[in-house]
Figure (spheres, rainbow, N blue to C red):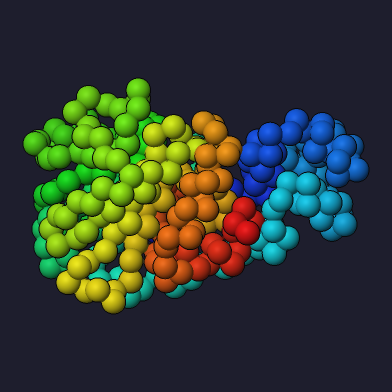
Length: 282
Ligand SMILES: [Fe+2]
């Protein structure tokens, strides 16, 4: 099964749940400060109850979420931009993961058999099922972080493409043989320039990758965002909420609005779209 369109990774309840985690407040405290019953807030997170607009506004204020963003997510019609105009081919490799979708990506010169792989997906089955037949070889692999739905296919990838360099963040979870890249490192490969942005927060070791084509200096760029942020949401702050906020601030300050965003879950988006609509980006 080829997944043509990925749904948003998070709906309203998930957004509230992540925002509570990020705030460092207990759920009771958030309910208290928002002047609603704690059980009610829990039912909203579990999708069994809805808040009145005035109540929702109070919760958003406590959690520092933008109202326009939350309304967009809650509308179940989150606007997504048309993705075109990249000076290369981008192949999303979408794989089912729980009730959602995990993504790996291939980029390539559209006439080439060579590709560069970002993350390796949930495992061999998901990876090969979504693999474009046209791409026969891989020049390099870049990993965003080491959760299994993002590097589960690493062994299978190495078997099919032996001796391919694999790059990623440092940390105790780094699989054997993965070469650590530090913040700001630049790798030139197959006509692409890949710049490393260290973005801890969701995980201690987490990278975003900016992709440019030096031969097309005015071409649209790409940001592979891993689980730092998605269309309409962010990754859970499992390592550190403060560092996650810093990492978001850094990427949104450094990236062109025009850049396409290829997240670890959910659909493609752009920096500009998320600046405008993502409830966590202010
Ligand atoms: Fe993930």
